[in-house]
Amino acid sequence: MWNGPSEEELRRLPRLYETEPVPVQDKIVHMHFFVSGCDWYACEYDPARRIFFGFVILNNDTQNAEWGTFSLDELGALKLGPFEVDRDLYWTPRKAYEVEKIATACGWPAEARR
Image 1 (tube, rainbow, N blue to C red):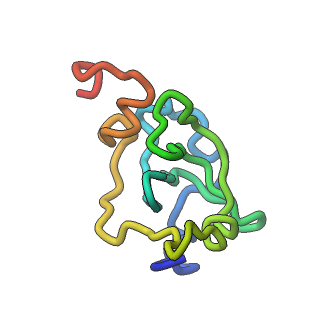
Image 2 (tube, rainbow, N blue to C red; image 1 turned 45 degrees about the horizontal axis):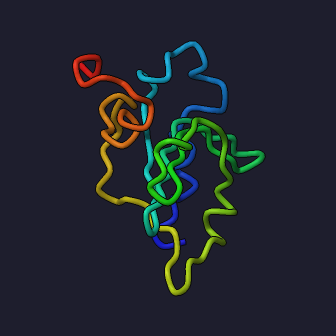
């Protein structure tokens, strides 16, 4: 994986289930990973199992995008031809409803995005 997160950066993320009481649209998206039309948005992290909870859009398919878990190690191993998953180094943590791709995939109307 290009620009993979450091252990220190991973320690700053909420632990898995820590933000469970927070409605999904208000969850903070702390990291964004991407490659060739695929996006992974990380909200929580489990250091023991090295998995994230967040939102995933594969191949720009917003109809089948979903909230769930995904593996840091599998992201790191994923190769699409010569391309590897990259982490968005310019990502600013924000609420899920503020991420246009998530809001669109979830069908949140623009006026509900505050």
